[in-house]
Structure formats: C-alpha cells, structure tokens
Amino acid sequence: MRLVIARCSVDYAGRLTAHLPSAPRLILVKADGSVSIHADDRAYKPLNWMSPPCTLKEGSGDDEGVWTVINKAGEKLIITMEEVLHDSSHELGVDPGLIKDGVEAHLQELLADRIDTLGEGYSLIRREYMTAIGPVDILCRDGAGQTVAVEIKRRGEIDGVEQLTRYLELLNRDPHLAPVRGIFAAQEIKPQARVLATDRGIGCAVLDYNALRGIEDDKLRLF
Image (tube, rainbow, N blue to C red; front, side, top):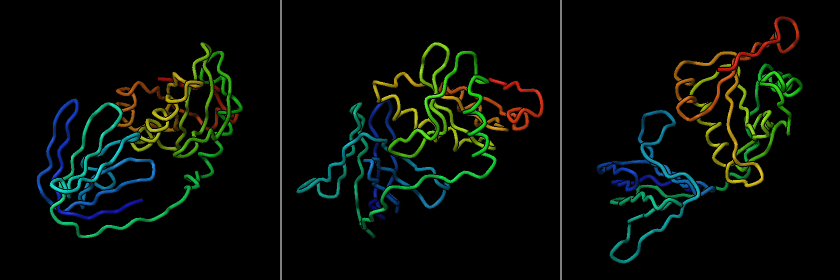
C-alpha cells in the first residue's frame, strides 16, 4: 500500500464530472490497483475513488505532479499535486480476513447445512469461498442454477452491503460463476442497509437464529 499526503486538487471525468478544490488530502494506492482520496473526516468513506481494475500514470516533464487514473470504462480521475507532504509504501501481505463472532460463525454453519431455507432447489457450492479480497460466507446455486453469494451478519448495516457489493463485482468477472447475484442475510437489517441493498439488486434475508437451530418455526423470511 502506498500512502501519500499532499495538497492537491482532484477532477473526475466519466458519466458525470466532479471537482475537489485544492486542499491537504490522503491518497491511498492499494495493491489491487484501487486509488482513493480521503479528507480528515467522513470516517472510512473516501471523497473520490477509482475501483480496480485501473491504471495509474504519474506525469513527467510539463505534467509532473499530475496523476491520471483510468478504469476499464475509460473514466478518469486526475489528481494534481501542489505539494507532497508524505510519500511511503508498505507491504501488508495477504489479509487473513475478518474473524466473525460466535453467532455469525454459527449462523453461517447452520444456513449452509439448511441452504434450502433460502428457497426451493438451492444447493451449496461451499462455505468461505475465497476471493482476492476475502472469503464469501456462502456460495450456492438457486433452483434455476444461478450462482448466489450470501453475506451473513448478526446485524446488517451499510458496510455489510458494501462488502457484498465488492465480492459480487469480483465474482461476476469469473465466467464459470457469472452471473452472480447476492443475498444479504442477518438477524436484523437496518433500514438504510435494506434500501442500499435493494437499489443494488441484492436480496435481503432476515435470519431467525433459533429457527435455524430447529428450536422454533423453521421459516426464513426473504424480502
């Protein structure tokens, strides 16, 4: 990972245009090729970014200090450096992934064992299906044979939907799996997360922990 702190301006040219005026910002260049620009607020959310696959070209000569990031759709993120305050690179290696708490891990195990509760004809491909950015909780097929990626949380919030979105983007590049759709499953799903999931074509499933354990009604509510 490369960390650059610089006074810079940023211009995006693609389906629309956007401009960030000159200010000190943090620029992250990750090993997967992604580039994101951050301010000292907004928690983890960047001001602007370019998702992989994309290419970064650092200008020279008259264009020295100008970074041009281009994705496969031809969209451009142009970063004009005025003053570089810090520039360092760090090798982070392969991340072991998020270690789920006991409830999430057990939910995954139970749902994998009873995958047909998602719908008639569902079949399990595998749990913890590994991708370049981490494991998908459950990969399965629906009754029509389409691949389905399931992300499981104890409490379903927006960051979980974002995580599943990233998995789907990668999985849909694999011709042996595509098209892949997603299901966001949790014991409780926040309204904002449900709205975002619906907007992205991701299904939502409310999990009843006791029901999956066979203690109560074994119905799974899909929305």
